[in-house]
Every structure is written in structure tokens, then in C-alpha cells.
Length: 327
Image 1 (tube, rainbow, N blue to C red):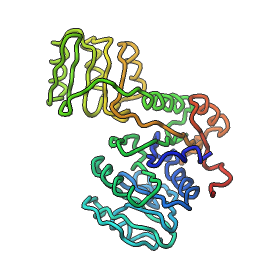
Image 2: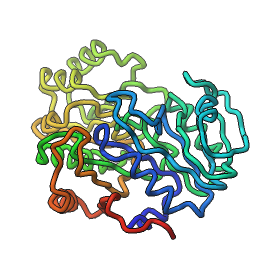
Image 3: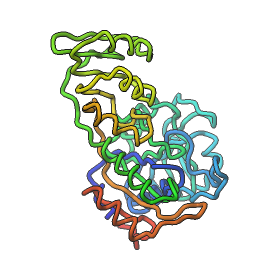
């Protein structure tokens, strides 16, 4: 079923939580596409032998001949693969500059890519000059890929590591699927706008998007039809909407990853009749499940697979049970 993503060139892998199977998923994809000139990088650090947060063992990232890897200088010093340097980028990390290499003999490697979204976008453009398909691994299972402009699709990993209660994991997964399906806005927005309000009769923009500035502007504006906010939408913003009792407008955000609040608060949008649109839409193209938790409280794999599959029409797989990945 992995071939369902064949038509996508640049794919981000994001996790519902730590230890939901991102590295296992990445290794499965690498093995399946190992005969391609595959590109690999991450935003931040991944692929270390011991998890840097909970100190549990992690699966290694195994790379094959002719693959293109972007990682830090220090990580290259620990790799068991043989490589040749293609490009030394100006992007600095705590582990040194990010360097693009081509693998000459297979081995294990640690990925430590750019730490900012702007740099990640530039790096991906460079890598596309060498690789036919690129996978981007998010550091620490963060579900934030703020730089989505270079990604064609996203693979979501979900699993028992998120919660001991399967119902809660199902609800969170459903929320993520919903947010990544928000439609693209057709409203023309000024390029310099950080905060934009449109009414039935007029509009205005602001470069100051502090919560205090937004509160004052929204409180003084009547008949609001659209609000655009550049950057994150936090729980404090949701609380402000509740306090102001502003209803029935369209909230425009850059992309789905900007919704940084607890998934249970999403019901406020329905209660206030707030529709959400995005400037950039990157679809979730596959879900991989991990019914096992590193600290116990595993799920029944068949039940978990069926319940996640019932949420969506996109492919859902348990990568640990795939019989073969090689083409």
C-alpha cells in the first residue's frame, strides 16, 4: 500500500506524539524507495540511537547508495555510511552546518536538518536539484511544519504513545484530519498584512498582531466577514473570540499547522459559527499506525486499524506488519 504515495515528490512525516512510529515509517519508506535517488532530511534532530527526551532506544535511519541526505556536519562524523559532499549550506545548527551529501555505500545515519522553516524551504529547493523524491522528518514528533510551501503531502503517524485511551487518540487523529482539510481561501490578502479584517463595506490591515492590538481592533469593528492572522492561533486567541462574542466570520490562516490549541477547543469554532480557510493546503496522503507504546498500554492492532480507517478514505497502514517494502 506504500505505493499510494508514488505521485508525491516532497513528503513530510509528522507525529501525533512522540513514539507514534515516525522513524519506523521513514525507514519503511526508505526501504521501499531504495532504488530511487531518494532525498532525506529533517527539521531539527532525528535518528539518534537513544531518544533525547525519554532516553528509550530508537530505530536507526538506514540509507542506501545514491540517496541524497541533508544533515549536520557532526552527524556525518557518526554515520556508518560512506558519502560524498555535494553542497555545504550556510544553515547553522547546534551540531554544525547542514551539508548535502550523496551516499556511496549504505549505512546508518542521524538526521539533523535546519531549525527554522525558512531555511527548510530553501534546503528542499536545493535538494530537488539532486533527488527525485524527498522525505522530511519532523523533530521530536512535532506536528508543526510551518513551512509547507515545498511539501506536496503529509504522512501522519498516530498511535498508543499519544494516550492510554484509544478513544482519545481517535478523537485527536480525527481533529488533525479535519484541520488539514480546510479549504483554500480565495480572498486576496495584502502581502505585508500580519493582521487583516474585512467587513461588509471595508477592510483594513495591521502589522501589529499583538493580542491587545487584535482585541481592540475586533472590538471596535462591526459586521466582520473575514479575519486573517499571520502566525499561530493559540488558546488565548480562542478565549478572546469567546469574550468578544464575535460570530459568523471566516478565519484565514497560513496553513493547518498554525492551530496551536488543544483539539477539544475546536468545538468553539462551531459554536461561534467560525469557518476556517487556509492560504496553503497540504493534504494528508497516508496515515501509519503504531498500536504499541514504549511504556506499555498497547492497543489491539486490528481494532485500532479499523477505527482509524473509518475516519477517512486515505490509505491507513500498520507499517510494522507490512510483509515487504522492496520494489
